[in-house]
Image (cartoon, rainbow, N blue to C red):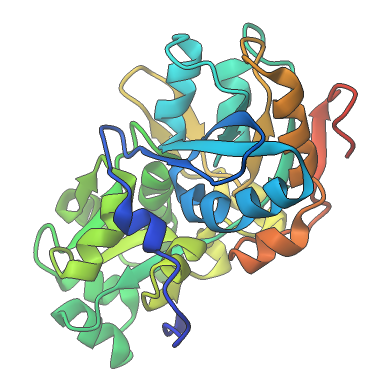
Length: 313
């Protein structure tokens, strides 16, 4: 069990705390560039990454300004499917989900550009936090917590939600604790608004939440990294991760898999050239992405199918 304590650097949550959250865990931001706009519809876990890191770097190097909107990936992909949103760029926290939802009618290529891991962030002023800091294994501390003390994302809207449930399932196998998955799933509060996962922990309304590592860093919250066996970070464990599944209410069956962020330009984009420029920038932004707390390794970036001219991988 790895515990990463918060550092003393200024918080990177200024955008998240200031922006208004709406249904489905969305945030919107408009960076200060003066060029032509590029609209980016992206996973909620990338809000700070894009607003504080990638967007400003992209704007310094191009004539575009980034307008970002952030939701759970399942929710944002439905918006593109339903044609209620027409972004220039779509970015999902689950590359396979993007392909399953959008390939055929909306896109025919994508680029995987970063990965991540999941674990438990917590408020040290709570009983759960105190037990974690005293060395109690996270699964024991979480199992003993009161109902609602632990929050997870909504698995119907967000890969982070179904990855939490899969992690509970794999943790049960890894630690030999019968019933762990069902106990944690039943007691966890399912937060439909992804940014509230972190704000709830900060205020003490929730003692902890299952989040991506970069999200805990964005909010300067202590973080217990899950083992490789269920943090979804290791491509070499893909077959193991796939033994855990989740079925959404509309019948979509997703299997555990290594976390991969993927970006593409949908066919209905208002400014496809701007979209391609942004995706191309992501393929050469490893330093910026790593600074934001993401991982870029294992052959990343890489393309799926054939990206158009202007997107070089």
